[in-house]
Image (cartoon, rainbow, N blue to C red; front, side, top):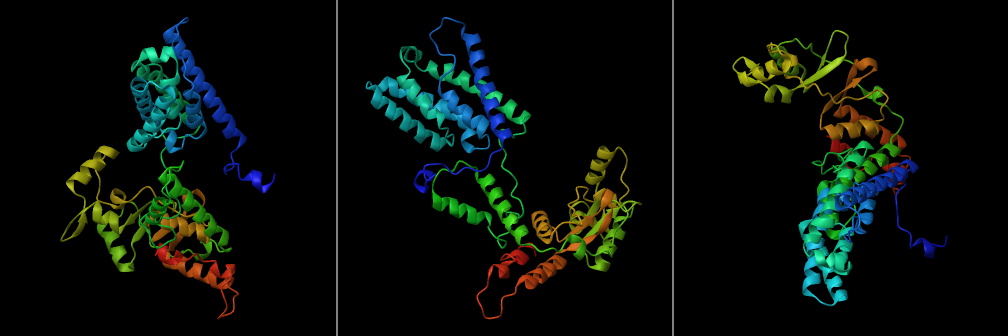
Length: 402
């Protein structure tokens, strides 16, 4: 294909055969269900349409690109509602159908953008209200309810059911921004940078802002991992770990944190399996303090009693964090950096087979290892321009996780 012809093809990411089949089957289910239900409600012999043509365009968005902001429930429902109202109004007020159609399409776009319910097929709904023929014109504003409203609700219901059954979250929830927490402005792109770029771009994108940020951060993580050296988490972990038993009293946990100048204590059982972590934040937020140190307050005791069915004992297990963010020994330094930056923790436990504690990695250990890798990979003589190898450690990485 010549470069000239290639310019007319859209840029599209790779899509698997499974996803293509899934989208086609979804459109089949959505359109077939909408048409059959509408025909059953109308009966045969009526001049009213059971299924209007814009539903075919809506099916493309709802089933082929359900993550698009243009395909969300408010987009299709609000867009079709607005477009049908504007279209019927234009048809009633303007006698020239071509002029009325142009006004209907333009007005629908303007109102949809204001109400944040932009849905491209709704433009066709507006034109249908003007150019749909006598059967549509005779409905007047009833066209908003039938067939537009009914068609919209049926195909939307099928989309919600089908997409979720086939592994596509719908209504779509934006992915969590991987690799770097949004609050970090020192590590690569920040959320403010993305917002500024979108404002400067000043065009409607067929991707949600949250998904765009998650995609950019995944690409950022991929670049970091591509440049990462052979060093693994097992090479930098500290094996001499200060831990605590779940039944240890709170004052003992406080004493260990103070004595060793640490911020996190792994909580392990008799088999060295990690069952939680106890941090300074846990002691500050989940206890009440008096002259003797931290103790469980009445509200916390009541909460634990209801949750466990037994009275708490004022021990580490009563305040520890059970959802443990952990590392694996085979992780690369880039993966460790990403996990640590995402969690916002200064120390993370390393677990091996069967969840047994192997050690702890601290931010200082990680930064030292990253700098060592970067120095080992930099063969550029002093005073010369840096090459790609000199950029093994992305700018701001050490600062971003510190």
